[in-house]
Image 1 (cartoon, rainbow, N blue to C red):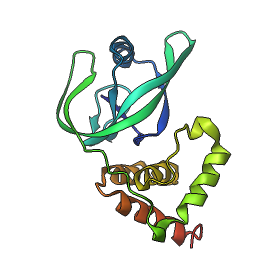
Image 2 (image 1 turned 60 degrees about the vertical axis):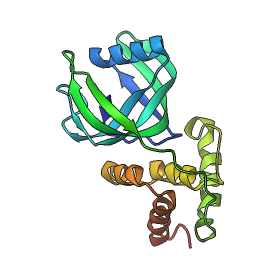
Image 3 (image 1 turned 135 degrees about the vertical axis):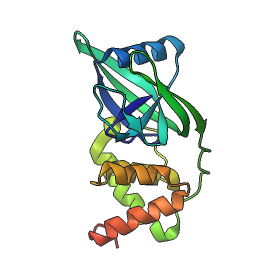
Length: 189
């Protein structure tokens, strides 16, 4: 587990600087086993030092790029895969958090409801402006869950609000919240 002050969504990307030995070990194991690790928003504690207490819902992260421009500092880019719920966790001697998790079922692919369809051109424009690095393909502008996740990453909201959006089980409800937020600010009508 990698507790952070950030939320990773399925299909999203996140860049991380890894320098603590426990996380170097985690990354090395992921490379060796071609495996993923969990990212969760910190509920209590900090990113550096003693193991932080994470929120119960997080996202699997797969390393998709890496480089080491300075000795002892590894830069990685991860892509979010499935969501999970922590059932139990404990820290090892290095302070690396290990957790027993259960996967949260993948949300069904559903079309964006007509009442929320005005969000799609806005996200398409943002994706075109942000480029492939910010919005790596494949794009699923016709999938309500994917559109909701992308807006949840982009909105200028506190990390705890992002966490609540990640935890929602209904992708239509997530997008309705996004629509309400943007309409209150005059960005969609």
